Length: 100
Image (cartoon, rainbow, N blue to C red; front, side):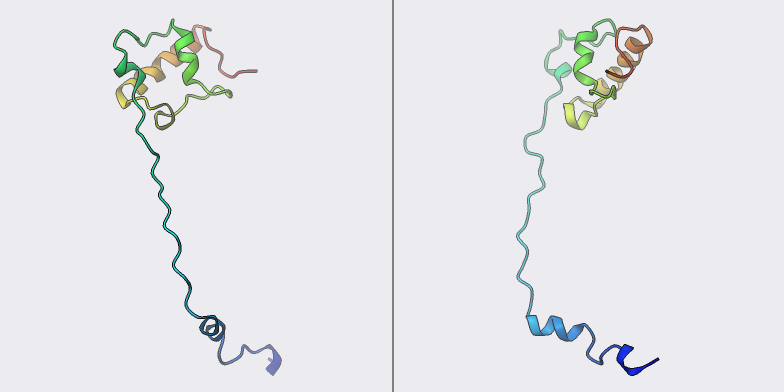
């Protein structure tokens, strides 16, 4: 190996020392803000039934996927029931599997 290809003795450490210490980075808050409330827990009269496709339509994305609970704010119990109701509505041809 020739001498011009060898790394210098100082290496990359010399460059960082000449620049000085880095300033501290600003701290970012990663909070999501206010917690969403489950629609079905808040309104006890609103029931989860596969025949109510106009209610279920809010929980299905444009591509036909079930929207996650972190987006909608639905609690775990109602998210499980929502999943079953959407699948039943699709099977009964009340909801499309994918939108046009």
